[in-house]
Length: 50
Image 1: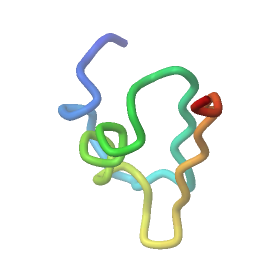
Image 2: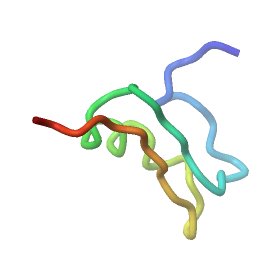
Image 3: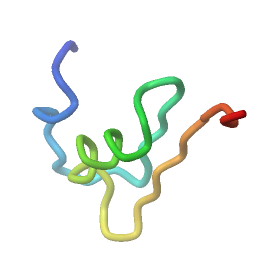
Image 4: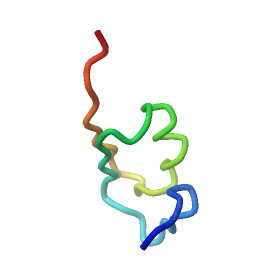
């Protein structure tokens, strides 16, 4: 499957959204907010900013 995350169907909602080196946290939440369910979580691997 290949599609833009903004167009990815969210039914049924996911328990969590995992990202690694995807985008800034603000962009990721903006683009993916429709994917997790009400109790869902975002799990993000981000590097520390020096």
